[in-house]
Length: 392
Length: 168
Image (tube, rainbow over all chains, first blue to last red; front, side):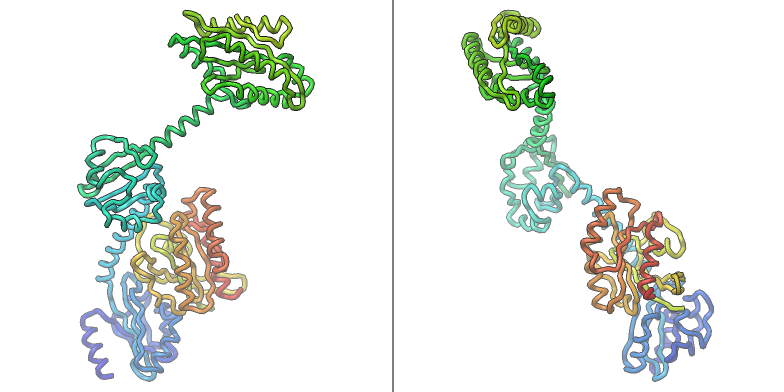
C-alpha cells in the first residue's frame, strides 16, 4: 500500500495519470483532482463509477476478481474520453477497494492515429487500383529489377496461376513463364518500350507495350489480338448472313460479284426461284414456307463447293456465284440440282420444283448487266413451263 | 432501466463509426477518419415494452496486419458485424470476427450489417445480400443492408439487436 502511494505521487506529479478509488459496490471513495477532465461532469464521491466510466459496464466480474485475488489487473487500452485518449487500468488497492488508473496517452495515440490513417488510406487506394487493374481485359504485369511485383487477374487466369504469391515464387527461376519467348523482363522492356509490338505466346498473338513507372517499375500491357479479330469476324459473319437460311445476304453477294468483275475473273451467276412458292404459303402457312426455304437452302448448299457463293436474294429467290469459266460444266451441275430438287420430298409440303436462270460474265460486264441477263433467263424459264435451267 | 453493451466489429473503413453517428446523432460525413482504440456512445433505445440504455462500442477496425483487440469484447451483450458491401473481402472476413466473438463471449446475439448500400446498383444489392445470406444466414440473428449515408436499415438494425439483447 505504501509503495503504491509513492508510485502514485510520482506519476501524478507528471500529469500523466489520474486515479479513482472505488469500493465493492462500485461507489467512488476517492479521486485525484484533475480526473473530471475526462468526464462530461464533475466527479462526486459516493456516485457509481459506471456513471462516469461506462467503459466499466461489463467489467464488473473483473473488478470482483481483482478484489478477491489481490494481484490481478486489467487494462482497457486507448479509450477515447472527452477529447483525450486514455488507458484504463484496474489495480488491487485493498481488500475493499480497487484502484482505477486513468493513463493519459493522448499525445502518443494521436501520432499513432496519424500513421494509422495514412496506412488505411493507402490500403484503400491499393485495393481500388487493384480492382481497376483486375477489371481490365488486357493482361497486365508490373515488374521491378526483373522480378514480378504484380499481375492482374486476367494475367493469372491466362497462365492458369492460382494467385500472385504463386506467380512471385516463379521469379527464382528467372521469369519461367516458358511460353513467353524472351529471356528476361528487361529484354521484353527493351523490345516494347517505344511502341506496341507483336508477341506470340503459345498459339496466341498479343500486342505488348512496356511503360516505365516511377523509374523503378515496368508495366507490361498485353492485348490479345487473335481474340479481337475472332470477335470481329464473328460479328461480320452475323451482319452478312440471312437469319432464316444462314446463307449470305444479297449485299454481301453483290460485293463479292463486283470484286470478281473488277479483277476481270470469268464468273457464272445463277438465279434460282422455287416454283409456285406462293401456294406453299397460302396452303400451309408462312411457318411451313420458312421451313421449305431452310430445307431448300441446305439441299443446295450440300451440292456446292466451299468457294461458291450462295445467297438469298429475298423471298424464294436465291443466287449462286461460280468462280469458273466453263459454263457447260456449271449448267450440268445445275441440271443435276434441278433433278435432285424435283425428286426430293419436302417436309409438310412434299414435292416442289425450281427454275434456274444462268449467265456467264463477258468483257466489261457489270453487276447490274450480269444480273439482268440471268434474270431474263429465269423469266424465260418461268414463262415456258418452269422446272428448267435456261442460259443467257 | 437496463444497460446493454453493443460492440461494432469489422474491417477498417467499413463504416462502423458512421453507422453509430447516424444512429446516435443522425449525422453523416463523407470524409474517412480512422478510429483508433475505442469510443463509447450512449443512446436510449425505446422498444415496445422497455427502454434500453445502449452503450455502443465503436472499435478500431481490423487490418491485414493488425487484429482487433479482444479485451474490448469483455461483457458485451450483443455485437453488430459490419462489412462494406462494395468490398467483398470485408464480408469474407466476417467469419473471422464471429469466431473471435464466440471464442470470448457466450451466445450473444449477432447481427450483420452490409453497409454502404448507397454505392450499390440494384443488381449488386441483390447479389451481395444473397451471398451474405448464404455465408452467414445460419450464424447471425439477422442481416441488414445499411447505409449510414442515407440512413437505410440503420434504425432497424440497432432496434433488432436491442430487441435480441432485451429478450423482446
